[in-house]
Length: 278
Image (cartoon, rainbow, N blue to C red; front, side, top):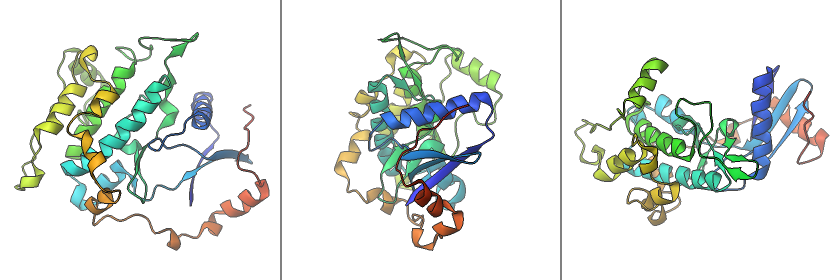
């Protein structure tokens, strides 16, 4: 089953972002990075096809499912982060910085596999054949360590149901970061023993949001922490069980023919189509 996105009447800057996303998607191949299978233009619409992620995003689940309005339990967080950090490690190995690691870009497939999406924000750290230390466009410069910081922020979002600094003006957030005031994870007061935050999760978050980027761990080191090692020890369907009563989308109830996509694909009779940008 495929899922479709399309972009219509894009301004110049958006067109460039989409073009970069499509090109990058052709380069990557990793279990935990969501990529487009193909893209094509029909009239004024750009269609991009990717495998359907039956649970939607982690943000979708937290916003719509009452049991997870205040975040996920730690076993869920550890599995999600393990998959996401694995995908992030892959992107970094290719010289790419993601720049948008957050819950809305953590997609969950019906088999319990989590994938990192949001490739439109990805930029290369390669200039003239060499890696650069940081990219301009951010008040401290974008770097691989910026993504690690975002992992910590995303972990906080997964644990509490909302992103740190939510609702604060951008200028105030910038000042807090510049003054070295990283967000911290407070224990959940839900009266449940398994709802309490362990030192393993707190430690990972503290490492990721360290004000000094040089002290933040690489994705490879994060994968070796006690919190993220759990993915190696759990069954493939463990995440699905932990997400109950939320269940994946039942595709048998979808009428694909109504979208007109089926007929368009038959007319194309191809798996990939090069897009001409004008």
